[in-house]
Length: 389
Ligand SMILES: *Cc1c(COP(=O)(O)O)cnc(C)c1O
Image 1 (spheres, rainbow, N blue to C red):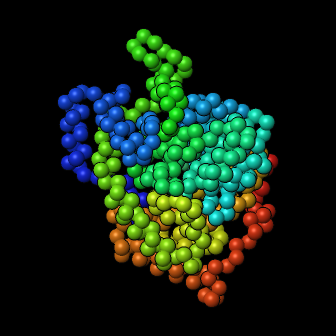
Image 2: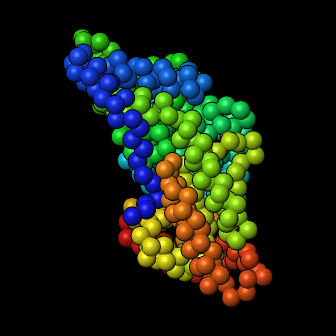
């Protein structure tokens, strides 16, 4: 069975050496030595001032909103994993969607500006599939309207923009180190920032607001990462270059084989991406479902990331439709990509993709059919406004 990804486990012996250290020190969690080592190594690797490890990427977002005092509403992307939106709602912040760019699939700065409300205090944007957002465009909008900028960088570990980690942009970035991500700590995440005062506030918040044994300052939560997770991170970080290299090889082979038949995400100019996913836009949902079924018959399980478009979430209705996000979310299939994906299996996947494309399109001369305008496509969808909320 071939899934969209396979958790990377690194060297068992290396992991067990760290586990020995844990047994010797008896230190299992709470700012332990392995966690501190991992934070330092991540700062060095990413070239950033502060990496604050957390126990998952969702709580990292929740803490981030509080640390930056995001209240009222925030502009966010409808094309992301559900946690980008649900964390806002969970923290009592109203998510306002702005549509994505048709080519990069990221939140569009122009759309952000069109959708601002009087109570908007922040922008929460995802570098979707690791493709850097228009960080300069977003920064200009944020400056003009005095907004905080949070990047959900869950997919962007190892991604560079203009020669440095994409985590340099915005007031802060959050990351997920869940087992399915390119770099992971089993469960885990981080908040990344170059702002010393902000980092200090976040460190208090992730540990109940505890300053020391007898002082508590402000409201906090438990978002600490344990030592076993930190050990896994240290092991995997040793292999990060080979992980990125292998993913790029697989990703480039897919590109070479599929680019002239399918819509692929346009990599942002000046970026070096990480091939954390390999998303392909099919012609329409029917084509997607047929292709997915054909792959499933061969025990290959691609995933529909990100479906459904987040503007259709039941707990946020009624909600204006975001046509570009809706159209895209109906057409995207993420193909298997992970370091030890075998070349033969990849060739089988490619063969099925091409065969299903040929079957669907009776005229091979027209390889890329024009996609219907997003507006028209959206009007053909069932309306979500008026559903229960
Ligand atoms: C995985 C993911 C998260 C959530 O991270 P967890 O560590 O699973 O809590 C948030 N945002 C995006 C875009 C993700 O892909």
